[in-house]
Each structure stands twice: as C-alpha cells, then as structure tokens.
Length: 303
Image 1 (cartoon, rainbow, N blue to C red):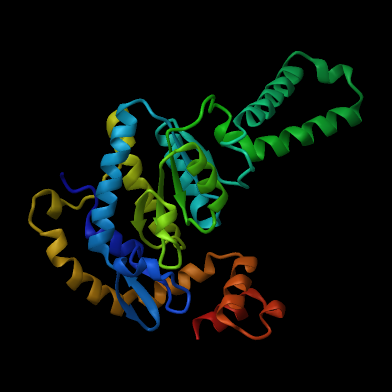
Image 2: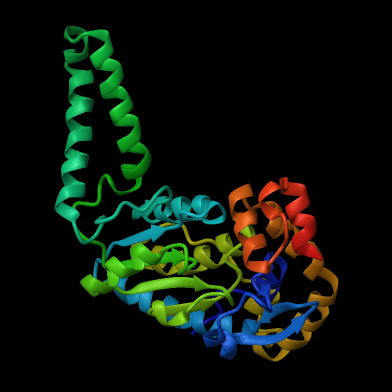
C-alpha cells in the first residue's frame, strides 16, 4: 500500500515516547525499540506497520457502510476524538463513558428521546406554560444529558467499530464492545495491555499532538471511502519515493530521542490534570504526593 504517514511526522509529534520503565506492561515488549533516561522508546517501524494494518481493516468497515464510535475521555484525546468523528460523520464519546452505552443501548436511546422531548417543549412554547422553577430543572436535566450524549445522539444503531485512546482509561467501553463482538482499534502505550485491543497501534497516548496524528491517519481510511476530507500526513520526499521510510526510521529515532525526549516528556506532564499527576506520583512511590501542587508533582515525577 502507499505511504499513509511519514516517519518525520510521527517523530515530530512524539509518537515514539512511552512511559517510564517502572510503569510498563511486559506484553508491550515487542513494540519497544530501546530506553533513554528511563523512558521507553517505541519502535516506530512497528507503529507504522500496525497503523497500516488498522488502516486497511478500517477501510473495509467503511466500505461495508459501517459506522464508527470514537472514544477519548482522557483530556489529551477529547479534541481528537470529536474532530475525527465530525470529519467523517461518525460518533464520539469525550466525557464520561456511561455504563451500558453499547450493552444497554435501548436505555441510552430512551435518554436521547428525552432530549428530543425537551427540545420540542422549548420550540412549541410549553416552557412558557410551566412554572419557572420547573423550566430551570428541565434545562439542567437537558444540559447533563447533552454533555454525555451529544456525540452519540444520532447513533440510532450500534457502531461497527470502536476507536479508543488508552485501553486502561477506556476499559469499560472495551468490555462492552467485546461482549457484542465489536472490533476495537486503539492507541496503546507502553503501560497498557495490547491484548485488550483487536487492532493495536503502539504509540504515545499522553501527548495531544501524538494522539491527533495517529487518530487523524486512521480516520483518513474512512474519509477515503466516504469522500470526506483526507488530511495529508505524507511529506513530499516520501511521495516522490526519495526516502525509504522504514530503512531510515531507526537512525532518525536515535537522533531525535537525544534532542527531544526531555522536552516532549515535560510537555506530556503539563497536559495532565492534578488528579492524573497524583495518580502517577502514587504509582511512582513519590512521598507526600497528596499535598503537592501541580508544579511540585511535575518536578518530582521528572527526577
């Protein structure tokens, strides 16, 4: 198949940066190239290979008219999940995963119908006939429903695939997909279990740029079939076959790791919430982490 993403883009986005050595899953060993300053470096040649496999599988699903649900409830994945879904007229979940979103789909659809009812009440003037207190309560109910269901409001039947970021974070979504036999595509970092996902894409799931890039490339598979916008992730050199991507990948990774690994790792920590940082500090055995502020937590984790 033709090149779907250039190695330079993967390197620049920091897709190759994994987690610290003490926070790894041994099942990810085959996707790890080396370590630098206690950080695992993902083998981008394998990332490209697995991304190509996922791309072809996603194309087949799109060719059969299948719809896709993008799930990214962690902060770093929310924007990418929504953008990819909107670009290809699919669905997304970026807030809390509601239990039964797939396995209790009828109940979820009943909540969507409630949203439709409230919309109709506002349009036909019903609100004007109700006490102000009741209207306020109904609007609050709508806001809560909309926050969690807006990305799947038009999903009238179960999706044919899930795209997730971080299997650990989206464990419940994966479980429901497994029960129903829905294939799961996922960005899997060095601290995750790849066995949870049908189509593993080894890569950094904590950097916004990395997540956007990988999800964007995979989304192109759907866009290519459906006639949506296809985003270009291939350099002119690669288009003209002036570079052998796989041959030069290892050398490029070696050089880029030396220059960029500290910077990207710091950027990743800064994107995390205080709660996420405290969880990491707890896992890393940082003493007194519960009373630390964000800057203190980042400093402690970088030591």
